[in-house]
Length: 130
Ligand SMILES: CC(=O)c1csc(NC(=O)C2C[NH2+]C2)n1
Image (cartoon, rainbow, N blue to C red; front, side, top):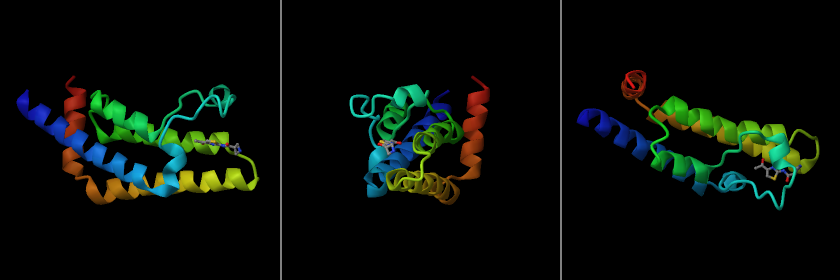
């Protein structure tokens, strides 16, 4: 009902704010857009579920996320994919893995500091009722 739509609207505002702050952080530049398959032709052979910050914003606007948990599954894909695609000891791989770990820690810190547990519980109730 209307109150549920108010909750989901507030969820989308929170998720857009988090995503835009991540996209402004220069450390996460490599994660802002889908990997360019012309530049990295083998990427889709290694990574089955690509994800990036611009796609998160599109998903939010398409009402894909009803809970923060669902949003975090997709933010986890971003750094997990980077760790998987860049496993080697060469400096470039190490550099992007460091940024992937920074993305993981930054998302978790924001959620811990800024998400009210009771708000997420209401979102989970809405998801289970649908
Ligand atoms: C987004 C992402 O994880 C990404 C984009 S390019 C890249 N890795 C490289 O270009 C090479 C360094 N060793 C492979 N990783």
